[in-house]
Amino acid sequence: MSFRLKTILGVALIEASLLIILVWSSINMMRESNEALLLQRAESTSQLFVSMIKDPVLSFDLATLETSVQELMTTDGMAYVQVWGYGQLLTSGGSLPSAEVRAQLQQDEGYVDDKHLFIKTAAVEVDGEPYGRIEIGLNVADIKERLANALYNTSALALAEILLSALFSYLLGSWLVRQLADLRKASKAISAGDYGVQIPVRGKDEIAETASLFNDMSASLLATTNELQELNQSLERLVEERTADLRYSNRSLENIIQSMSDALLVVDEEGQILRSNPAFH
Image (cartoon, rainbow, N blue to C red):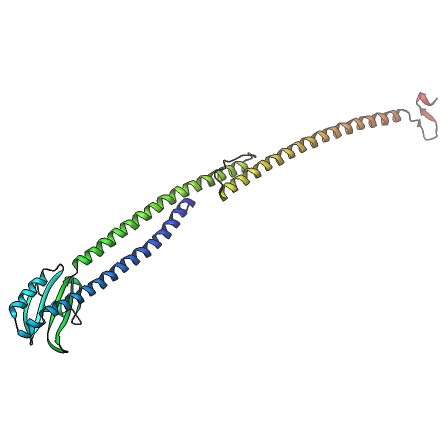
């Protein structure tokens, strides 16, 4: 794996991890915030509606109850309304949930996810004595849609951020690799015997400092190599001179030996001179 690819993958992985945490936290906070607002809205709506219909329930005024229900149904997000009193259903409005939907609730209120409903109940009481109850259903499809859109937009933004980070990482890796490529090329040149090669120094970071030190090392290596070559040449000249002196000395020694050989007396076994150098007479 190349250094450039390692840089891209490393930065992208860090960026993706941080963005995943950020997206998850943001969506979770939005969900909790919307749920809190929904609960607050359901509570305030149910209590306000109970205060409106308390007297009609006690007086069994169905016309007023019907009017109140129709007014409540004009509120945005209202799915249905039921008013119970004296053990019976007094009036209702909207699309009432089926028994199967009601069976999905473990309590008198809560979410029915597949129907996008939030059901809220409230008792109609006077001095703590219950006379009836209401049940309202709020349509949470718009809330879920907003959360889905927020998740999509946030995820798209996170993906764009990752792509931009990968692009910047690629550019950064390319710039770093260019510096390293110069170092690698110069190192190969030195290993091939091209001492003294220099590379361009860009910037003032650690890589630039390394390039500058490499240039100093290459220049020092070239100077050392030149000194060694000069020393070798001097040694060669000295060897040649010493060899010439030795040859001259050998020739002189050979001449002396020859001269001495010519000057020697030649005698026989009885001591008679057979031949002598005239220089001895």
